[in-house]
Length: 513
Image (cartoon, one colour):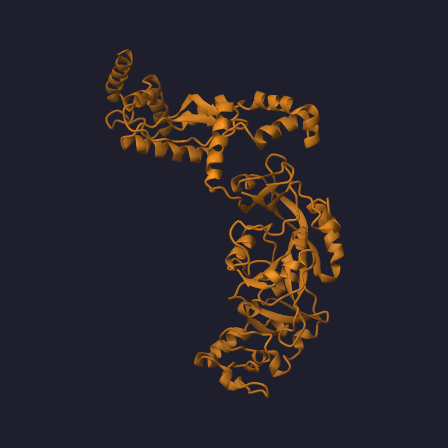
């Protein structure tokens, strides 16, 4: 009875103050442009009349809608991600209340994991697991408990200021024994039903904190850094266009080269073969000028030479290891680029054209217009490179060749905006690399791939020549060890993500998910 009187009293107060609502058209002409002031008055109205508590009493007999609050850490203040999530959660719970449900809303606190441990490690100058063992796990846990809710008061103020209806009085804490026991009980039920699996995902990773970060966290702390900028040669195992050639890929992370598993190209990009320092190399024709390679001064004055040097191939798929596919139509480029420039060579036949439109001079120009200063002796689309096998810089995982590794595969994300148009693919250290492996059926989603880097960012025994070396330290050693496979070795200054907690460089790494 007393509770009902309280409810009636609060409702009467709300009705009496309704006419004083600052948003009323007749009363708010002087205040309508001050949204913060309107918000503060509405919040004051809700608080004085216990609007949230009253709504819960009024809906007590309705069917329940169960809402589990995903808890934040209280060792730091709310950021944009928390504010956005809280707004969405409040929208969902208000919606179901208005749909006729009783919606209990209790706040929660995540008391486990890195944020708490990192604060204690920093406070006590702890850097290794052995130091924690020496201190005593019980004492370490107690120190964590003491600081776990240090910002809880500030959290309550900010969440309430958002206008969110939720109770902080009966909030749960993940460090409470009943909560932990309930989680393990539910997990066991899922496991018994064979609903648990272990997956993997490439994520931003802090080697100082030994933990993955969200993309939001990874974007919080970018710095200008100087990194290696190298062009690496990947020799093809068989001749291509009658020549022994190497594919060129650019990277700023030499430490990923021991984990190279494939090369990626865009099937619509035009690539070309050029000769440099007595070697034949392949990259996108639009990217050659970006690397300032020093060619002989008389190269630009040379003619293109034999007609077989510049080629336009027939439309369709070719196996370039077959002899018959190495005889496409040859042509010499005249000044007006018309059909009269076509000349029939001894080893070609017009019947090899698969479509009439291939005789269109526009198509001929399409292939020849990308030959800057006559440096390229042959051009072709990326699709011609698919499935070609190559020699990786390191042979630690060479046994995986039988599974389709160390070949050229297509990937739409490869572009002409940077690099060579050919991407060195280490699927354990690049999200797009991993997706490309899945898309090309080399692995299934959540399969594991070679990942010889531990949680401290050091090489494991899978790469014995660099075991226990931190990735950034290994860069110089790797560059030195494969110097014969490096065409160009420079430095680049660019923006790079750092851990917002430890202020150390992040890496992208495959982690259990």
